[in-house]
Image (cartoon, rainbow, N blue to C red):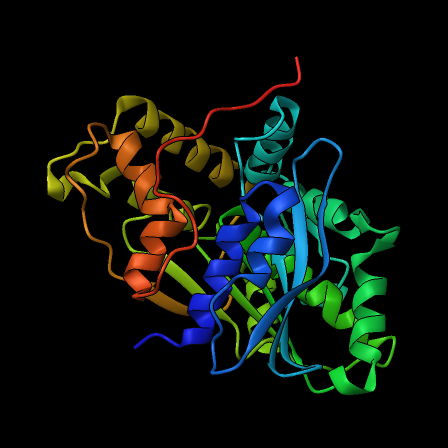
Amino acid sequence: MTDPYVISYLQLCQLSYQPPKIIRRAVAALPPVTPGGSWKCVWGPAQSSDQSNLAYVAAYYETPDVPAFVATVIRGTDVAVDAWGVVVQMWEDLDVLDPVPFPWMPASSGALVAPGTLDGLGVIQQLTDGGQRLLPFLTEFLGEPQNRQARLVVTGHSLGGCLTTVVAPWLQVSLSGQGIDNAIVPVTFAGPTAGNPAFAAGYSSSFTSSLRYFNSLDIVPLAWESLETIKAIYGADGLPTPELVDFAVDAAMDMMQLSGITYAQPGQDRELTGQFAPSPPTWYDEAYKQHHTTTYMTLLGGTSVAAEWPRPRIRSRV
């Protein structure tokens, strides 16, 4: 049986896709993980001005006033936002061809991350709620005597999962520099890779309790380590890969090979055995559904706090 805490982390990820104005109420209404427990959104939700990135912090109290854990939740790619915000997210997702050194790991480690991922981290670092950014808030909150033992969970789905793997080491180094030594546990769902094998090794050694959940039929976690697998992922179930997808995968693999770029998934793998859904009429619908948080929740055996998977429409201010 899946850890009920892991189910709660995915529920938090589901709420990150909700309209910001309802997230605080939705967090408070989450079912308790333990008898008598309660939830509270203690920072955020904070969203960038172009709506490209969103994060919030939720605390879970098993007993009044003493949190068992504090979760920093990072939203994934959301196309139901301003059109320019969608473009920015696509940049964060796809800008992978010129990896750069990761500042929160030793230069000697050779850890490199995708520029788009580092851009996303930069946005998360600047998000504010009530004039306070994430790092100063966590430094103050975790520094309070009653919060010193709370573990700090960092979690996200999709792009949020990828960003989790860079937010966690940034917070680890930065909080440690302020004398905050709460245990940090990153938990990702459906995340693509953030960095090269050296980055993945450094992350996995720093966060030995980290968890990486991925659906075996989800194409997103195959980027950018196992792109070749995408080309035949639904073939055994009678759904051939479209020529456009084949072309895009081949082009990406060729460019990465020419540039000598390799990526690797970090963390402790937790594979979820996907179930092919023949009802979607197209390859793209199948890929979308296999990536959706509700599909992940079904595979985990939990209860979703989000709607089913119909495709959202892109909003625009224009």
